[in-house]
Structures are given as structure tokens and as C-alpha cells.
Image (cartoon, rainbow, N blue to C red; front, side):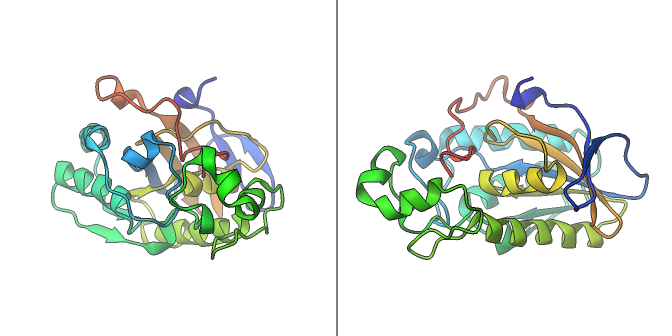
Length: 244
């Protein structure tokens, strides 16, 4: 099954247990969207916390996902990482939906990748070998030299952000625009035993959070059906574990 056709429902109680099943009626529906494409995505350049704008393809992708979401039911609020590539995508969504403002949340930022930020992936091993080795480490508590975060630190900040959003929006539909590394952490929280493929630009992922944000259900993931005409970067750079 491809990443763009993932339809199974996966539930987690936060204790490492996952199952296939239905959802509770009392939940917040959180539509999590990866930002549109940037020139650094197409150039295989590591972004992390560096603030890169959408390129023309990314703007078209943002318009496409915005049009889709505007036709899929009422959206009560839109949250976004404060980095430009996410915020610009979120702005397109609120423009299409009307009557909303983007709420910025720095906890939704991409993982800080320290000394690797700004480098092309192909040159990282030679230019910053210690940082690259840390990036490839299987240890989830391994921080990246140059002020970079560990996977555990990323997981803690972004899952707590989504839980806080869920508590505020019980019974509502909310959009969250964020980054590939964040979305992989959210997958891990909802489906700890499942492996996922690339997180493509403007892919749509639907989570249901209930019980004060403690129970997570992933209803669908990696949906890019809205990009039939706008197109997408097939490499998915920045949206898989090997590119940050």
C-alpha cells in the first residue's frame, strides 16, 4: 500500500499498544498537513529550523490542498509552525476557508538539525561527519551537534502540542500545518508498531484525539489526491527519516 493510499485506522493508548478499530464519538479531528515544496526540498538541502519560503510549485500545492480542505467540512481553527514554509501553506488554507486566522505554534517546527542545516544531504557526511553520524544514529536520545535536537525531544514537543490543541477543540475540526519530521513523530505516537513511507509535501493526515488528548487514532495518512494537477516532489525530500 502506498503512502498516498493509507486508509487503515490505527489506534494508540500512549502505552505502546496499537490496534485497528473504530473511533470514539467524542474527539477532536486534527487534519495535519505537511507544508508545500521549497527550493531546498527540490535541491535536497537540509532545512530544519532555517526559514525557507515556498517555491512556485509549493504555492500551487498549497492552493490545491486549501481548495480541497475548504470543500471537506467546516474548519474551526488553523494552527501552523512559525516557519515560513508552513505558515505560507496555512495562509492559503485560511484564505480559501474564510473567516479564520493562522495561530502560530513554535512547537510545531521541524526538528532542529544543528550543524546539518543548510547543507545538501550528499555533502553532509564529508562536511559535518560528527553531525551526520548523530543524525543516522539509532538512538532516539542522540542530539545533533550544533544545537540540534534528538528524536525524543522532537517527539515530546510536537505530541504535547497536538494534545493541547485537541483539549481546546473537543468536538471540532482543526487543521495543523507542520513538517515531515513532526508528522513522523505524530505517526509514532498514534501507531507505534507501524512503519510509514515518505511524508510528501501537502499530504493530508487525519488524527482523532480523545480522552483529553491521551487516546490517538490515525484515520488516514499520506493523502495527496489533491495534487493530481499541481504535482509533487516524488523524492519526498525532508519527509523521510533519511533526509530530516
